[in-house]
Length: 131
Image (tube, rainbow, N blue to C red; front, side, top):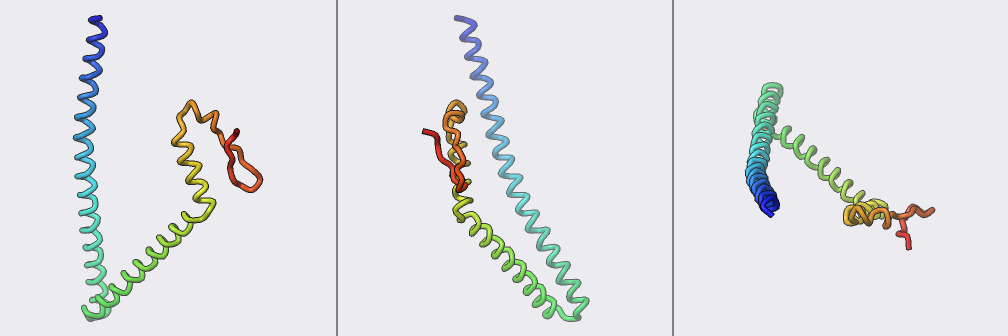
């Protein structure tokens, strides 16, 4: 009985230590993510500033260089938004939705039930569960 109590106490201490480590690492991860976003913004502003300076030297006018830079950045933003729209459209297609459902069903089933709930492919590309 004494050995069982020592085992439980050791497991509790291990769990407590791991819990504290996980909490501190979570805080550090959020801090690193916030700092990464800050430095990415600072870098992008610096590159934009340098591009404006180079355009001003090349075109001879700050106003014209800023207008050109705004147009370039607007075109980049529009192209990224169209790319996002395309990705969202692809995600809404039936085969992508079916793949998502299969993935979620595969993740939701336990390892013991996976072999019993294995889906079978049919000729039309859809999947049916065995009976």
